[in-house]
Image (cartoon, rainbow, N blue to C red; front, side):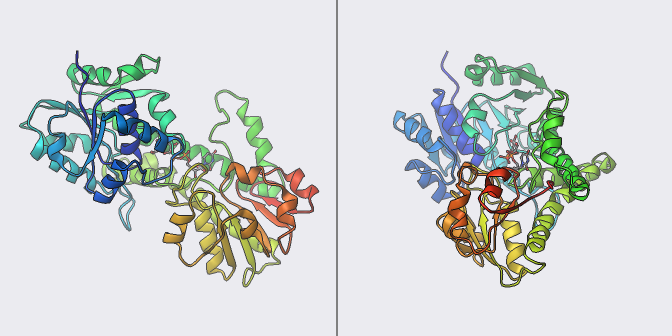
Length: 434
Ligand code: UGA
């Protein structure tokens, strides 16, 4: 039986990764996006973002001819399966998600589809969006399925080809059969499949991100308590982690979560719950968000304390700009939020990041930048470790010690070894630790 022909609509992080990985699995894939510059870049083998290994994979599949990119919906009209991967950012000035890209993409697809096919929603959406999408195709033979995506930036290929689970939200056996066919290579490798209704499938994604955000804020709330009783949140979290019911993953206390997903997803989930009349069910997420924001403020206060209660005119070297390591994504980055707050308080802030410098320079032009950790730290009164890249963890404290003005380090990610830094003459402080 011939393999289904695929289209991927929206070539951002999720869509580009999905298109490249499905082509690598042997499918014919056409990716469509309204951004012509993005289409040109991908066609020429250039990724518009940083993701370990993905540019090599793009370079490997392009010559096979199985993967093409276009701005024209005409070219995807004959696909058997369409994957909807457009973004759903937070609306300006509101908590709710902006679903205008979904509406535009679905509207375009509806005017081009000429044959029976499956539409697979992968975007993270407010529950109820799929039901609204289905109305666009009331007179066409389009089977709607929901298949949430759980990929993490930095691990996108691994999470796409070897996910923890596949979730298929279906309205009929035909939808399930289409999904089992298109995901056969992944299912055959032993990945568990959960088949459910479409509403549940939409909820799985936001529930997962809400849980992860809650877990991080839980341990950061413990860090707040640790700070006043001189306890050690790192040891606390280690001790908790041996309880298998709790587990140690996503239990690292520090500067908290950022990025294009967790913060906006918990806010959009709260907004949707309000619309549905169940806002009380999710009011705890307001607290999860507030704890996360307080960590950023605490980082600034801790730095001020270290510098004799004054930030004005102080030189601060910042290690990290990306919202997390192995990414150049600076959306809602805790590191750049702290850097900006320090800058506004009058400090001279110099930022270094192994991957996110270009993006940071573009969006935060008022800050100063350096091409290396040593350059960022030169002449500094304090060095702040805000994104836990391996190169910072492995750094020799004595090397930075030679260039700073004062050996003050604040570890916002609880990832440096305090013994090594103290042994090299540094005054080491961290969030949630004595
Ligand atoms: C997150 C989810 O982990 C993915 O499963 C999901 O698919 C994705 O959002 C999405 O919705 O598309 P991602 O945004 O790539 O993935 O980042 P995470 O790895 O979840 O990290 C989020 C933030 O939490 C980072 O700022 C990280 O530094 C922080 N974090 C993580 C902590 O502060 N402590 C931890 O213990 C773990």
